Image (cartoon, rainbow, N blue to C red):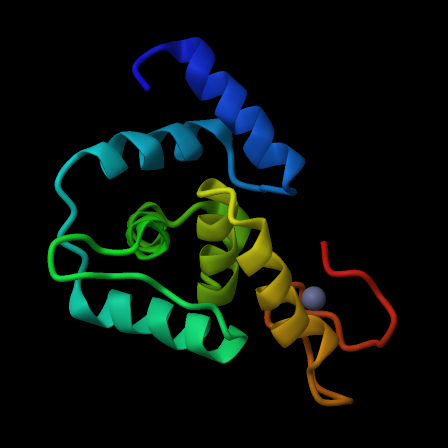
Length: 134
Ligand SMILES: [Zn+2]
């Protein structure tokens, strides 16, 4: 995706999915994704734990790391200000970047819809019931 039109188009799609990080950080993540990624073990474990909690199946093999983990690792390094250091939000943005709507729904369901009464949503921080998760 060296063509700028392509980047704009995919950023638009990312925004349609509710993506919140800036186009600059988005582009930066895409550029890094094309390079060699050696995500740290701890970062991979974080992503795996969040996915496990939400019932999202990751598909990493010995040769290829699941793209959702790769993007999680990259975003972890970029630290977009919009996610305010929340690992949960970082993972959500990673899912939006790979346009995985199915996993997005699972994550929102696990963190927001099915959370215990009185606890807050790790994605949006709301404690009240019946509010939508942005
Ligand atoms: Zn929420």
